[in-house]
Image (cartoon, rainbow, N blue to C red):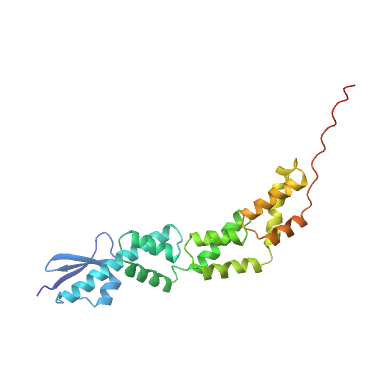
Length: 221
């Protein structure tokens, strides 16, 4: 019966342990997983144990890949699971990694969604429709999105933000008649995701300047 002959720290990463069976390297696991599996030198390397070690190694690789991805950029649960599956890990294993990262607080869709809303609004005012679309693209759950967007509506700042955007755009529309200027502002605010009642309130709040009068044509008589 083959036996584990050595458990030695990896030269590349001392936090990883190389498992050797009859002098041959068979796997590399984190020290935590080695402890969880109860591996010791001289332990019989039975088929059942070999399978557990193989599964643990896949889990360890997936976990380390997930952490590298999260260190580069905040991801939603769905985004991370998709990246792991694209890397060749099974759906079940990918989901297990996601659940583990959730449990330690490294993956939090609610916090991610709230941060995305803040960043979007800080860059440029945006209404519920646009915010919802952005969160959907990041793979957040629809129920969670509804809850997050509801907090934006309840904040009472939507009309203020829409009015601020109008004020910024007014100089560029100064040569247009009021009807045309309002129509263009309405379209701008709608594209930014604001709801009709908010747009109407914001437009009523801002005084539209009258376009400069055209000079009278010269008298040719």
